[in-house]
Length: 600
Image 1 (cartoon, rainbow, N blue to C red):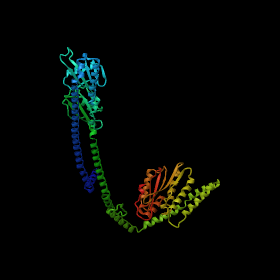
Image 2: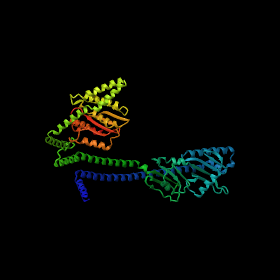
Image 3: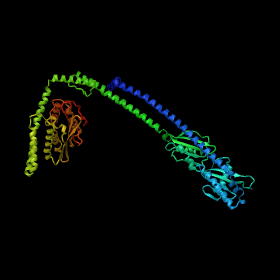
Image 4: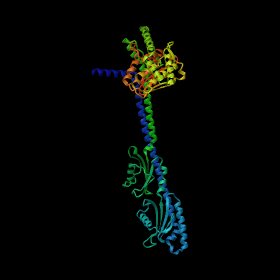
């Protein structure tokens, strides 16, 4: 246990002393003040924006309520001017001394006057005059009729109980009431007439449309008693409803300020003003989430920038690790191995920087040392083994027996066309494998030979599998490759896969052209290639020891490595069909290309 703790402490000590760790720590400390400054800017900007919006809301609410007061005062002046109307006074005082014609003329003139008063303001929905002496009610919109005694009595009672108010509320409708009384003119009833201006709640609320500058903002008109309340539209918010209902609970009229009510996403900015003249309050509200929507976007953009900066730090750290730290560690480990006597040491040198040159120099030094010690002995042995394995695999007696048996059956059943074709394929196959004039062949001929072999075997396994063979790209047909590098791969599939399948087998040979090489894939859908066998095969291909028994795949792998160097060889993996996939990369010429086999 103590040993493990000591190892951990040693590792942590080395990490803390590493230049890469110190550099990453420095970048992290640089990020902290940026976050703090950005958060401070956001908080300050939010408060400043809140103050500016609050001041703007207060100013606009104040301006709207004052404009309404002036309009109501103007309507009152026009209402008082009607007291001097000659026709109205004649109808109210001396109706018995007027004939029917005079009464009709007076009513028409009075209705014109009422209609003119009604059209003088958008707030007015109707203007009515109640004249008890003639028991008539004259309306600008409805004309002359019997006196509306209920409205006359109710409005007169409201004016008598609360004298001096500009607006009275009856049935949630605001009225401007003027009752003209002359004491001593009549016994008992002193009212000559009453002039009632009915205001339109819808037009009142429309006048505050300019206040609604954002989504879900709205306005409310209400008196402290709650008898009169109208809204531009209803916004579902319990905190706002509680704020508005406080007027109904007897809160003093001095409850006039800018407030932020609610919590979280339900916070609402509210501005209210009470008018002593009008007798009601104007309440305007705006949801804060809509006010600060753009500010939230800037906050999100700030965090995005922080994330980008963090990604930049990580990428920079990884780049430094890859370009500087990792090559140094690799070189250090290689030197330690050589100190222990391991001369077969190489370091991956893919970089073109100074470190790449340094690692390449180390590899050359290691390679020269191995060549001096081995004296090319291992290389010669591998060549001999590869040639021997090639000669051994040229003619497989079992394959020939099966092929001639298939041909004999075709002749026996008089299937002459297929027998002729099969015999031609056998001739091409034997001619290719027995031609020893050269160790290499054009890729087109090698692929054609592999296709013929697959077709010959396909006749034998026609009930168990089918083969799909692609075509070699034109630009790679003349490229010289080692002979017999594809047939053993196909033969391996027939021997280890399709011999054990009753039906549904699939063999695929594809040629995929990349930027700098041609990728050949031989795939099958065999169910026997589990992960353990695949890892064992990969481990054998990565082993360069010459004492290992040379199999078909290893033979091809070493021949390709001899031709193309470290970038050559075969690579195995899990097939897209579910079985084994064998990949071979073919290059044009001797130009040094980076291997892309691992991309597959």
